Image 1 (spheres, rainbow, N blue to C red):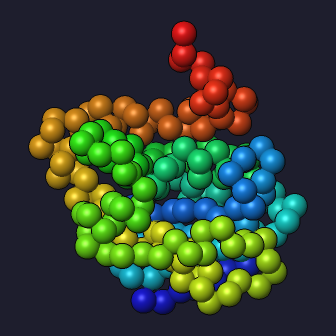
Image 2 (image 1 turned 180 degrees about the horizontal axis):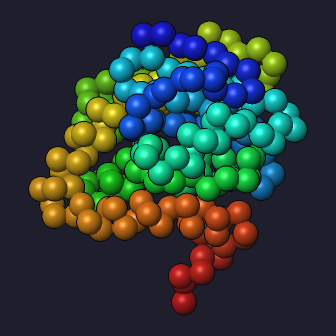
Image 3 (image 1 turned 90 degrees about the horizontal axis):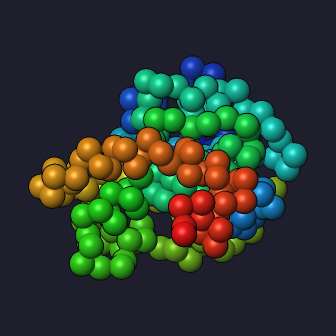
Amino acid sequence: MAIHLHKGDLPDGLALGPVVAIDTETMGLDPRRDRLCVVQLSDGNGDAHLVQIAKGQTRAPNLERLLTDPAVLKLFHYGRFDIAMLKQAFGVTTAPVWCTKIASKLVRTFTDRHGLKYLLADLVGIDVSKQQQTSDWGAEELTEAQKDYAASDVLYLHKLKAELEVRLRREARVELAERLFAFLPTRAELDLLGWEDTNDIFLH
């Protein structure tokens, strides 16, 4: 496994294949208030690319091209948050997307445990640490522990997606999942406009 750290954007000419796992690290959990600090990506072959985003940065052309490329599927866990954060930071709509958390909720209705740590342990047999989840991602220099944590959030998503796809097919919920994935960018935009869970536009 190799972890590549980039400042401000992905390097020119980097190809990450047709399915790219993506996650973000931020200063908090409100995309309208808290800034984007790190975007991590993986092509599923064992390497991770971490992009540090500077305070006040509003453009990352290579990353933006990837996020909006219709030929590249962007793979997330709880994509709703990451898509909103990327939209707030760069003004682009990430699509098309696939979300392992949504897939889990569709096929693992026997449990309320849909966090990435649980899914990787149950379906992929990999134990990842969440110790750095609440560390200071806005620091100018990331620690080795932070880099390892950020990488672990994307390195195994391709394997998790494959396991969840088996279950989606078994439960005949592939088409439903695809419609939900297609709606995710709109759901993220609603969050940015103020229609979060407590003021959900679909509620009575």
